[in-house]
Image (cartoon, rainbow, N blue to C red; front, side, top):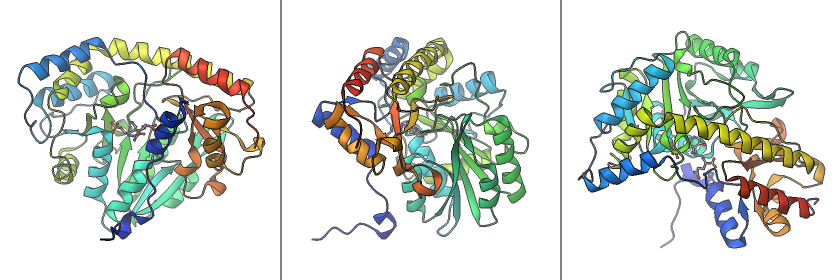
Amino acid sequence: MRARLARRLQDVPPTIFTTMSALALRTGSVNLGQGFPDRDGPPGLLAAAEEALRSGRNQYAPGPGVPELREAVARHQARRYGIELDPDRQVLVTAGATEAIAAAVLALVDPGDEVVVTEPYYDSYVATIAMAGGVRRPVPLRRTDTGFRLDVEALRAAVTDRTAVVLLNTPHNPTGAVLTEEELRAVAEVAVRHDVVVVVDEVYEHLLYDGREHVPLATLPGMADRTVSISSAGKTFSVTGWKVGWVTGSPELVEVVMAAKQWLTFTNAAPLQPAVAHALDHEMAHVEELARRLQERRDLLCAGLRELGLDPVVPEGTYFTLSDVGHLGWKDSVAFCEALPERAGVVAIPAQVFYDDPDESGGTHLVRWAFCKERSTVEEALERLGKADLTA
Ligand code: PMP
Ligand code: GLN
């Protein structure tokens, strides 16, 4: 029998992360592609998971998540940002941020509704909007003298009465931009004016550099009741394989997201949830140290790429830097990244795939490099790049 993919998924390509990590394995390349650390999270977190596994926490977690994790998320939001949440009605545990995004979009978007999304985007957004039958309206972050900045005029033009959701990400993958208060204020004003919900992906909320502080969109005027905030343990505690995430927001919005979430995974990772609760309460010093180490790796990678003429943008947060390889003569970043394992034994991500129209938005020659790796891994990659001919 011929397997026909449903029409709504036919234009969605396979995820670039699987493709590029398989390529790295096949070619023995240093993997600066997919964003995962090569060092485990805090030992206390791992011990808490082990304890939960051995003490009978292995059956279904409650639908909204285990109470101690919901309470720990609420405590974290209050302590860190002054956001007061009822853990029973305003916190929902999900299978990573990925499920949280999918549940939010599926719950809030009807077929034909428009979703305004920052571009370049994280690739699961595209698939999720397609599954909901939504129509994507990208708003670019553009390269400027002060890193990548949100095109606020484009945002104002894109949000209309047809918009169901604005889907935002800060700190932003792949540009490394941390939206400024001014940019966040512009988002809030537009959202209030058009009475739309903003879904904000904040998975890198703790990975900011040079003394920057994360400002949750939900704390801006008029936003507490119209923001679905999403985060995850994967990046904060270096356990990307755990897939424990959470949604916070008003009781009404969380209930709406739950309506979809309960039919996706129902629940997940029962013994990992209490461990993440432990980490949110007790392992934040480790996270500060992680951010410090990441900043050092960022500087190492950016200095190395600059020396090679690869023109990196110094990211304000996240795991990633973008560099433009246009001057090396490649047709686009896919051609460059496909040749890179053979030329240099290194894998990177062609960021042009995170654009609807990369030519229009300046994304055609952008390559994403991950620095969430041990110093020796970054050094090895730079050494290999230094020996290679990188011209087309
Ligand atoms: N959003 C962004 C911006 C990401 O970079 C990632 C990758 N971790 C995710 C969501 C997915 O998070 P999780 O692994 O918790 O599903
Ligand atoms: N968030 C990670 C990245 O951007 C990868 C997640 C994934 O592989 N889906 O590299």
